[in-house]
View 1 (cartoon, rainbow, N blue to C red):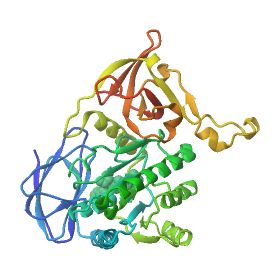
View 2: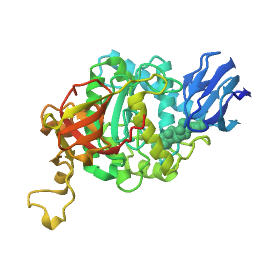
View 3: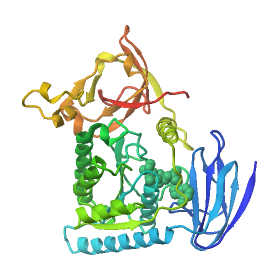
View 4: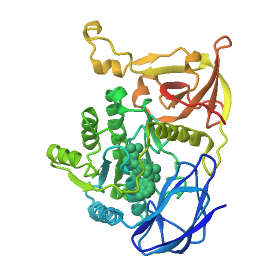
Length: 420
Ligand code: ATP
C-alpha cells in the first residue's frame, strides 16, 4: 500500500481526496497537532476515510502527517481562511458568554443563532462543522440545523434535520446521529414545494426555540444553521424566511458579495458577515451530487465504519396509510373558488400501494392522525423493495426490525436502488 509523509508548517493544510470507489485511506498524525474540519486528531491513531471523501487536515502550529492508501489531488496549501473562521468563532463565543451572563441573571436570552449561506460548493457545511466543533471544544452544546435538503448531512436527502451536538464530529463519519429531529420534505429542491418547505422551516424553528427554553446550557450555546445553495429569486426569499423564523442573529455569507449586499440591504437589523471560501472546497458535478445522495441513503441503512444491519420484511398493504403531500397544480380557472395555490401544495393525497412505489423512500411519520402529517417529525425511512399487487403485500427495507413503529407513511420523490 502506498504510504507518504507530509511535513506541514504552521497555518497550513494538507488536502486530499480518496481515489476510486473501493479503497479507503488512513491518515495518521505522526508529530505535532492537527485537526480535520475542527476535530482534533489524536497522535499515532490511524483515521480511516472512505471513497468520495474530500479532506483538509489543518495545523495551527505545524505537524507531520502520514497518508496510507490511494489518494488524488494531494497537496499542502499555505493559504487558507482558517484564521478568519477562528475569529468568527471567537465572536460567537463572546455572544455565548454574554448569553450565559444574562441567563444567570434570570433574563430571557439565548446564545447566537447563526446561519451560513452562499451558493453551491463554497464550503457551507464544512464551515458549520468547524464552528460547531470549536464550540463543543469550548464545552458548549450547540444545536446544528441542516436545511440543505439536497446535500444535507442529517438523515437522508429530502429532509431537514436538527441535532444536539455534544461531541466533536468523528473525523471520518461526521456528527453522531443520535436522536436527530427530522422533518420530511420529500423532494431534492425547495422549489418543488416552496409552501411546504417554509412550513417545515417554521415548524423546526418553533421546536428548536422550545428546546432552548428548557435547557440553559443549550440556550447559551446557540444554533448553527446550514442552508441550501439556492440563493436567487425564490431561493433568496426562502433564506430571508429562515432568518425570520429562527430569529437569526448572525448571517455568514460565504464567497458571494452580491448576496452579502442584498442581505445587508434587506435585513439591516441582523449582523451579516462576509467570509471567503477555502480554495480547497471541491466543486461537484450533478452526477457526483447524485451519487453522494445515494451514498447517504446507503449509509443510513448500512453505516460507514460502524456497520448497521437493516431488515427487510413484508408488510400488508391494508395495514398502511400512505399519503403524498401536494396535489398536482391546476390552472387557476379549474381551482375551486375557495382554494388557494398554497392549499393544494399542502393537500394530503392518499396513495394506493402499487408497483409504482418500487424503489421509493417512504417516511414513517410520528403523526397519529393523517391531519397532523404535514407538521409531524418522522421516526425514520423505509425503502420499497417490491410490491405484490395480487397478494397485497409490500417488501420494505427498514433500519429497524418489524413491525413498523407507525403506519402512516409519506411518499417521497427520493429513490434508492439497494444493491447490497
Ligand atoms: P453544497 O453546494 O452541497 O451546499 P457546500 O457549500 O456545503 O456544498 P461543502 O459540502 O462544505 O460545500 O464542501 C464541498 C466539499 O469540499 C466537501 O466534500 C468537503 O469535504 C470539501 N472541502 C471543504 N473544505 C475543504 C478544504 N479546505 N480542502 C479540501 N476539501 C474541502
